[in-house]
Image 1: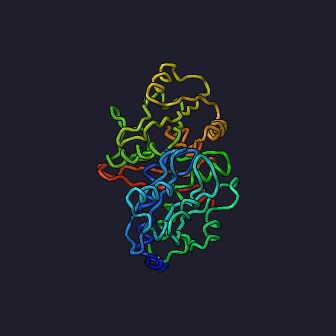
Image 2: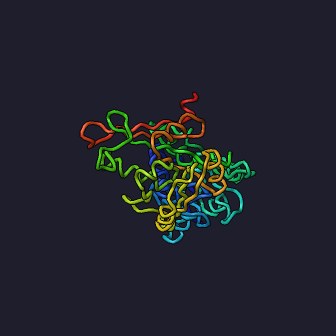
Image 3: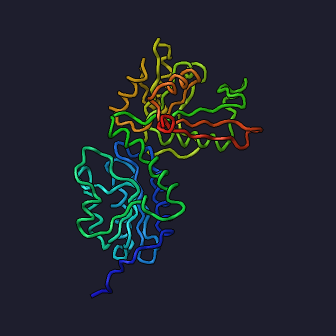
Length: 333
């Protein structure tokens, strides 16, 4: 017989670091997993050593927990699994893949840390209950006594927020991105397409990368002929985003739509923002990034349809911009 299994909980700092790694892994695949949420998982041994960090990469592929366990099996370390740290409650139902709760129970793990509970109202019986019933110690990030716990919880909540809204309302999470100069104008100087820093430009493309759809208006199309592609970092392989255009008067040129399709986008025309969001939700769109002019952006901000507002404001010479992020639920108190 082998040595008795060590049930000693790992230090809070080790768990916090594992959550940070799992969240980062999931964030790398945000925008690639719909209709599933992005999820990350870290597996630790009894000494706190990281055995594997994996993420769910696309729908139909292995979930994060199963991928991490498979990595340990391939490395011959599965018998060392002591603690499972996961950004979202492990599933306990059969979908395209087997339940992750059962995958965890196939290992010697006896402690599981979870950042966010499963929000899916159509799933009966969560993974946490299944693991607890099997005798595992199941704890949540909110219980972690560590200085970074609140920040990690906020990061994990934002990671899954688009999925939460979509699965509970049928509507996508709406992020509005605006770049402003020192005067508050969104219009670049003559002859320039932007006035923000290199870091901010990379952020803008990162936001685009995690979105399932881009929403814009006719004015932006006619004024800028934008590409709406991800260029400053690698895009998700095979990703095809919807380009939702509000075009009440049919002014978008047909050749622009043709060229957008050639760039891998899926153009869709709408006359109303409410109709657009409803249709996008039906297309399994979790997050919409609004990249539009000041009129359309202001019109959406005046409603309760948006969820997050990211403002990139030029400061001084533009080497480092000021970035603010606000959430609609914060505004509503």
